[in-house]
Image (tube, rainbow, N blue to C red; front, side, top):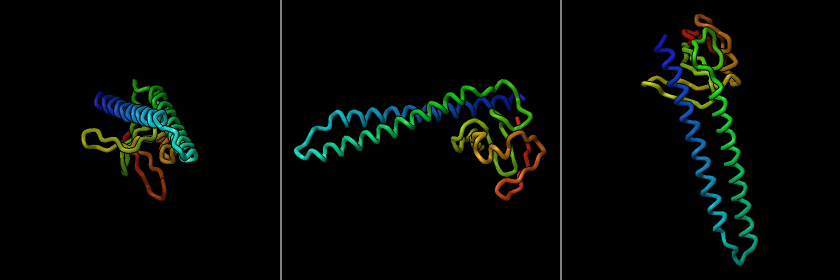
Length: 153
């Protein structure tokens, strides 16, 4: 039981670290683009200058959106209750199946813990919906494949 709780905490911390990296990368990229926009000098060709500034503004808006999304992910991660083991697939649970290992939190892709790969998924994802509220021993069908749920904690 303690090993299961430790794994959940390690997965959660790895997710938080990944999201923090995304936040930092977005902020850094925004600073670079903003500095470039501030240094853009008005050339003799006015249209070229305006086009460059417009492109930088679009890039800033895109990065701001990415930053906002990463901050939302961080908030969602902080809402996960890790103090108790789960007996069915729900937010914060780890699910070991015949096709792979899953951590239901936010969609971040693969995270490796001690050479074992876990797919971090959200409940809103198709596989998250398929696994939701199932228990160890249950069998589900997903994308035409039969999946056996071996463990949930």
